[in-house]
Image 1 (cartoon, one colour):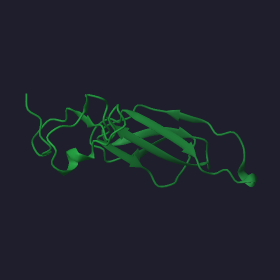
Image 2 (image 1 turned 90 degrees about the vertical axis):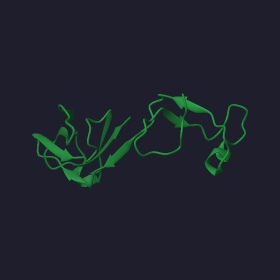
Image 3 (image 1 turned 180 degrees about the vertical axis):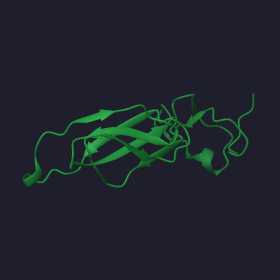
Image 4 (image 1 turned 90 degrees about the horizontal axis):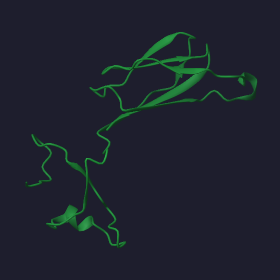
Length: 118
């Protein structure tokens, strides 16, 4: 019934729109304006994790993410693209948990993991 900008002990209802449909800024809401458009339950990102560079083992690997919940989305991307090591890279997701992203990556191939929770 009433929304507040106070984060502690309140529920996330959505995310504030910084540009309104008419092209004007909604930043006034950040400086005390009482009105702002909000995308309700619009999949606001609660937390994002980016790993350090990892090295594939060819087996399932756990990469600790620290999100505290099972990630909503995962992106795994190879970073070892030098000509001397070019070759096919196989990436496969496992069953992620509230503590780890689980991936299998070709042995010796370098990669990063990005995970986020909505």
